[in-house]
Image (cartoon, rainbow, N blue to C red; front, side, top):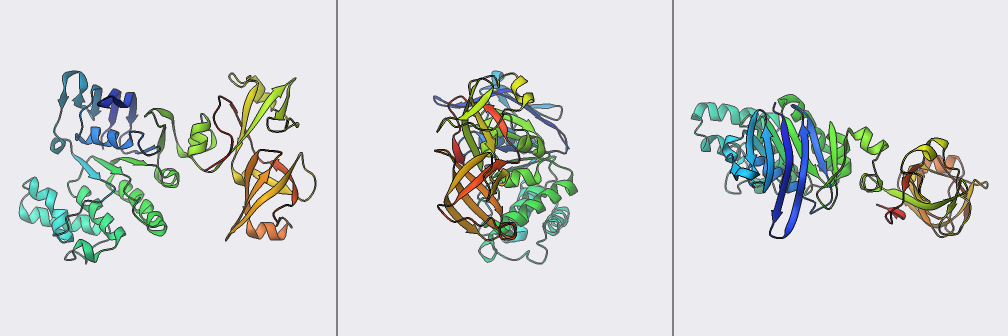
Length: 369
């Protein structure tokens, strides 16, 4: 196990600054995920840790060793960092069978032949690929090729494992299967794991902590999966971690009103009124679709169903609240049992099991995700 530290790390390519004064610490044995949109700098962070890029400024430390110092132009070579890396495209050698692919890094390290074979076979077994050692990559499924890439990364017994979008090329079922296998591998090897992805489901499923990164390469929030999902720091984090409803409202004489039609909305909780930063005239009331509750009777708010979609176990509605569209979801079985199967054009009562309140700075409106 090794700790990883970024200390005021910056990296640019030409005139484009990708990372600016980025600082964070990954604890030994932790599964730490950087979650963010494409192009935000996640992969650059991985490449900086692996030694494939050198920071312009700042220090990167692995364990007690400074492996890169931008001010001195210093970077320890990748082969001296004891790191395993798995990228999105797997990069398995097409002309080598499974065993040869996994043996490759040990041959580069000049590990004795018998020891190398023993370690390679153990790594292959670790990823449940034993019995397939002689197969070539074209004879393997995408999930099996991913396991080969993992075995090759594990065979050197790295203190740190870096995974850069390793499941994005797999279908939904394989992604679900592999994300749990990756978590089990991390536990069994006791490695420090950095995982980067734009997939919030994977991040929430496998992480000890998540760092949510915006398009500018800045961390918006770092916390446990429960913290970032239930207590998002701002609308960006809330939006990025799932389907998000943002309802623009304004405050007048202690009451809230829908911005779209000036009708009174729900009361602003006393606790929220007291919080610094929520004194703004314009706010966003935010919720998830499952937190929108519909009824046949008139609720605190009246809505109109503008779209209905049956998604198997889920019914998905889009509800017009006087010019603001929100998305509501409920279990199909529950909808049938409670007579909540609405058709397009129907009126319904609307309330919310939970609302989060954010100051409104021109971002977030209606439904996202």
